[in-house]
Amino acid sequence: EAGVAQSPRYKIIEKRQSVAFWCNPISGHATLYWYQQILGQGPKLLIQFQNNGVVDDSQLPKDRFSAERLKGVDSTLKIQPAKLEDSAVYLCASSSLWGVSTDTQYFGPGTRLTVL
Amino acid sequence: GDSVTQMEGPVTLSEEAFLTINCTYTATGYPSLFWYVQYPGEGLQLLLKATKADDKGSNKGFEATYRKETTSFHLEKGSVQVSDSAVYFCALSEGTTDSWGKLQFGAGTQVVVTP
Image (cartoon, rainbow over the protein chains, first blue to last red):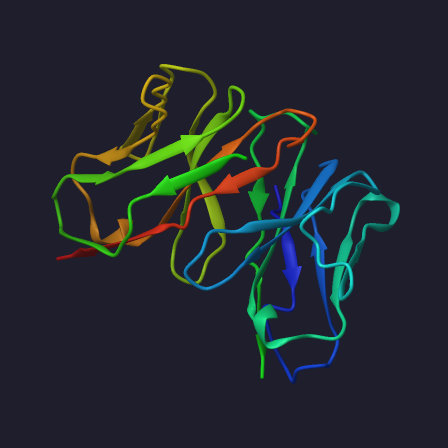
C-alpha cells in the first residue's frame, strides 16, 4: 500500500514570498491533517479535513495560511506571505476514520521550509 | 487543555543498554496514547499504541503501558541497537467534539545509541 506522499521535500524562500505544499493521502482515507513541526518541538496541528470539509482549523494563522482539499483526496497548504517564523517541517497525515481516538494516523515524509 | 510532557534529550546509550523514556499526560477524558518514532531523514512512524487503561502496546522490542492512575505512558526497551537511534514522540488523541481525534504531541526525545 502506498504511503502518504508530499512534495516538495525541501523549499527555500525569501520572507514575504508565497509557497504551496501538496499532499496525497493514502487511498481511501477520509481524514487528512496538516501539522507544523518547528525544530526541537513536536508537531502541532494546523488543520484537519474530513473528506473535503474542514473539521478544525483553530490553530491555522488564517491571515497568511490557507488550505484546501479538492474532491476529498489531495490537499494543498499555502502560505502567503511567509514570515521567518514559518520555517518548519510541514507534515501531512491521513487516517481512515474520523473523530476516533484509537485510529492510527499515517504521516508523509514532510516538506522542510526555510524562510530567509 | 490536553498536553503531553516527555523527558528531554538527548539520551545517549551504549548498544544493549536498557532504555526508558518518560511520558506523562493531562487530558479531560479517556485518550488513546501513542509513541511515534522519527528516524533521521524520514517521516513519523507509529511505534505502538494503547487505547485504554492498563493496555500494553508493544512493537520491535519496545513496550509501553497505559497507566491511568499516574497518567503515564513510559516507553521501554530492554536492549537497544544502533538502529534505534531516532527521535521518539509521545502523543495522545481524544475522540471528543473538541478534539476530533487529532494528535497532541510531546516535544520529542532524541535517543543516540553508540556501538
